[in-house]
Amino acid sequence: MANIDLAERSVVLVTLDSCRYDVAASAHTPNLVKLGPLLKAESPGTYTLPAHAALFNGFLPRPVSGPLTLGENSVESIWRSAVARPSNRHAAVPFDGPTLMAHYSGKGYRVVGAGGVTFFDSSDPANGLPRLFPEFHYFGRASRAPATPEARVAERGKDLPLAHTRTLADLCLKAARFFLFVNCSSTHIPYTTPFSPLTERNRGLLRRLYQLHDFQQDASDDDLLTAEDIGVLLDMQRRALEWADTRLGDLFSRLSTRRPLVVVCADHGEEFGEGSRFGHAHPHPTVATVPLWCGVLGGG
Ligand SMILES: [Zn+2]
Image (cartoon, rainbow, N blue to C red; front, side):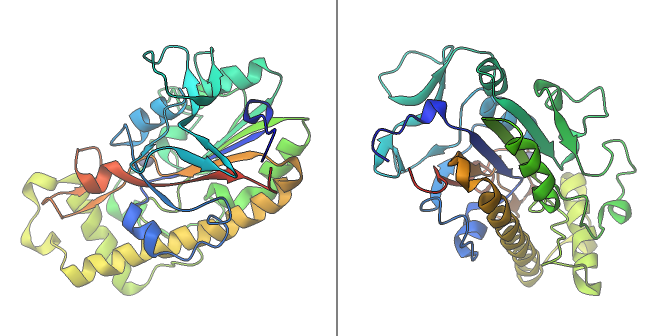
């Protein structure tokens, strides 16, 4: 890592939507740990929109343990916007543009985004996040599709962005340098992936979990989940993360010759009743505490 200039590298930035820190700590993620150790971090946002608005301005979830280690280098932060408040903290990549995407576009990088949760449906004019990218690919359900639990509890495959790693890598490799962002929806409710398919039992549990997300203040006793039920659902998120890890392994192997800087984190976590609520978009340690990995593919 000596002599590395992080500011000149290609970048892969991945958000594992809604992935809890404790779920990440319990999962088998051999490809993610190649980047570096799993770090416990605190997100600046409780749901997708504010968390990504901060992220796209360079504000990563902040590790609770202090500076980041990238190979042999220790950095206090990776990106630092010129509008951030004055600080003596060392940033590896200070930048002056309004977003990371504008910064890297201005340097001649190919900037590509991909998403899977509805805030990234680029066909919906109400969505601002995908419009921050010169090129965005959306694979998830339509943002204005029926939102009943019956419609949302579904098997997922090609509608998961990480099912398309070959396409995304090929787009990046056409350019000398690239900035690739992927919002990974596999870890977002309903947690269904090829590793975590629907069963009769988890279909019913997911319907009740959607009810608890949607009507937190007046859930009936029939909607409530037992500790065992919650264990089944958290295990689905763990398997969904393990599926994402295998797909990220494929993406990393395709891009490793470019030796990009890679950052993988959750945008926020998810509460499963620990503070009497379910879901996210409210402050609770299970929502604020997220996993973070970072490193350089292929060594320095
Ligand atoms: Zn999210």
